[in-house]
Image (cartoon, rainbow, N blue to C red; front, side):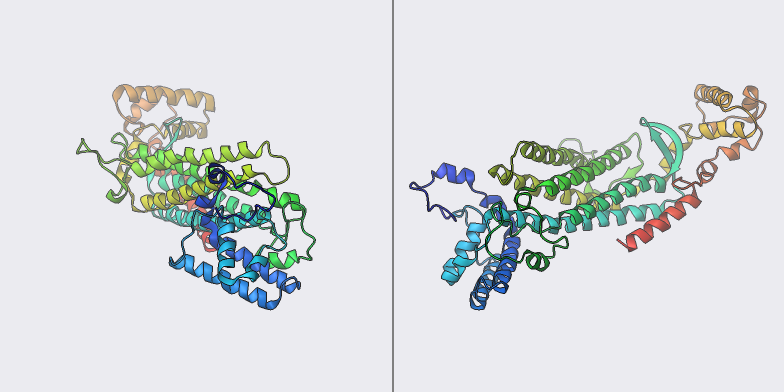
Amino acid sequence: MAQLWGGRFTKETDQLVYSFNASISFDKRFYAQDIKGSIAHVMMLARQGILTDYEKDQIIQGLEGILDDVECGRLEISDKYEDIHSFVEATLIDRIGDPGKKLHTGRSRNDQVALDMKLYTRDEVHLLDNLVEGLLQAILSILEDNIDTYMPGFTHLQKAQPITLAHHMGAYFEMFRRDHERLQDIYKRMNTCPLGSGALAGTTYPLDREYTARLLGFDGGPTLNSMDGVSDRDYLIELLSALSTIMMHLSRFSEEVIIWNSNEYQFVEIDDAYSTGSSIMPQKKNPDIAELVRGKTGRVYGALNAMLATMKGIPLAYNKDMQEDKEWVFDAIDTTKGCLVLFAGMIRTMEFRKDRMEKSAKNGFTNATDAADYLVNHGVPFRDAHGIVGQLVLTCIEKGISLDELPLEEYKEISEVFEEDIYEAISLETCVNKRVTAGAPGRQAMEETIAYYRKYMEEY
């Protein structure tokens, strides 16, 4: 057992207690952040005259050697150490001797782990945002290619009004655009440096926390309260909330892909590379990626709920409960990153059955509202128009035809207001393209929206 404490203890820690307490099995993933933070700390200590330049150079060279050896596989992070901090410091002392024993001057594992977690999370927010950008690019390509691809829009999973595939995809662009902005907001708010907070009350050494914050790229400077500095996990809760929202959006999108891929809809054909088969039914081609994304959403939700449950009863300042944050956050980040990559690949290679979409829009009375609007534009009160078109729909259902196929004389039997131009008024092209207000599916509105999205991605 290699640990950074024990002077006041008369007995060795029970092995079960030691194993239960240890975090090396999961916190070893931020070895690079731990070394980066230690190098900045040592540079600051030397600048303040707390360490000599010789000691600084020896420690930094030793730390850089450990980093290089771990990344090249020459040095294995062993579970005989309690945590990643113990591993780095003990290895450093083994390599350079007494100067290594000064590495921990002016800091505690409390502010050290708070720093490591922030550095790690900050790096991961960048990676997550890059993946969201890739998904937005994939969605934007679908928008650009499908301004004139007509399909039914749904409410309550019932066909409602005609739209375009571009307009439908635009709704998801908006969702993931908000996700991008949430990640940016989290990054900005979390970008303060806890190092120098000590265990909870700072330190008597003349630390220059502003300098350390600058070295580590914390634009917000040092944290302003040392107790909050070591016990703040709000940024992790915010991140888990943002990841849960990303996964919720992916899950909604997955649900639609699953429905659209079904034999009853056949709106899409998922590429073979993103599908699986059945062990018993040779005809099957299953949308497993979409189903797994939908399923893994609950896993990320669970991390958020677990984190909230842990933090709700913790008094100031640091408590060991907070060690639980890492596994939840690591798993949620890994899960979300994997889902973003796979989902973007799936929709990039997915074929949209435009003929099926258009036929579905025509056969679902999605133009019924436009038929009512036709009557309103000819002086019929909307409530009366609503009832007239309802009768027309009943007639069509009885005959097994669409509104487009109903003869004009049957229109006139229900209302003399109808003329030949009703067919133009209820064509899919007219129904969609006369909707030109901001955010609508009409070609003019969609072209303006897509131009805005292109500019948005250029400035991403």
